[in-house]
Length: 161
Image 1 (spheres, rainbow, N blue to C red):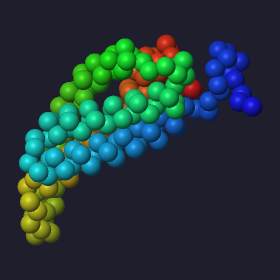
Image 2 (cartoon, rainbow, N blue to C red; image 1 turned 90 degrees about the vertical axis):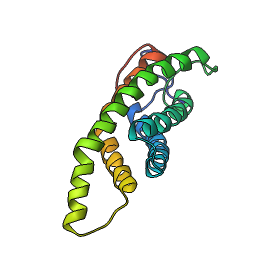
Image 3 (cartoon, rainbow, N blue to C red; image 1 turned 180 degrees about the vertical axis):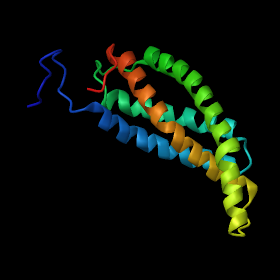
């Protein structure tokens, strides 16, 4: 028998952010693979992240809305539209941050390291690696913001539990 929450009668859930992090981690790996491939192929970091993150957040919403958050179980097109709008803005902002960090912080560091060890690296691959490092730096903030927004959107509250 499933335990229910004494507060709202919904199924009791352990600290849900752990489940959300697991689902988001799968989406993040998908995002990272797509972004890296696109950047290595010569697509600008900003655009590559916009494309890859759009695919990944759709994946996360579709899985997490049923596995992590409490709702009535119906397909929720209106809430997905609100989530998509939120993420359009969030992805643009994160993409700007990732591109800026990749170009101004991580790519120069990687170029310096490559020259120190006399390693010839294709500039697109160096930028792809720089974009990975930038995405790693930005991810904790975007993950937390996404979790809070989904909690508010799907349950009317934003909390870690």
